[in-house]
Image 1 (tube, rainbow, N blue to C red):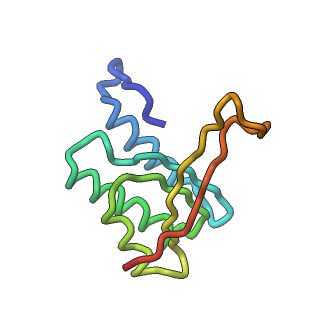
Image 2 (image 1 turned 90 degrees about the horizontal axis):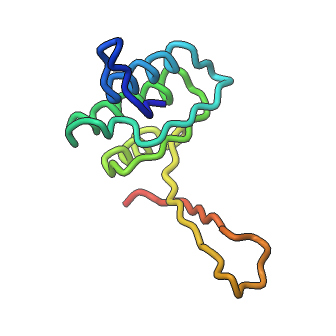
Length: 117
């Protein structure tokens, strides 16, 4: 989503992202699984937070589908306090095994629940 512009149609990368997310919102159902990564990052911080917040709120309040929403915007964590039955905040990290490791897995993904203050 939003990986490149569409100059022939007069759309920047940011505009392409907005059009694609709008299309996802229009077609998602409560049975959908929606994955969004860094939505709203193509503009100013305040505008990006507002766009990401409104988008995530739309998925949780109206569409009510399972949504994985990756973000660096801490204000979005507020949604868990406002709607704890629908929103959970998690932190993700990874461990990269060194060549001398005995594990067959080159990367180990870590995920833990963040609790609101």
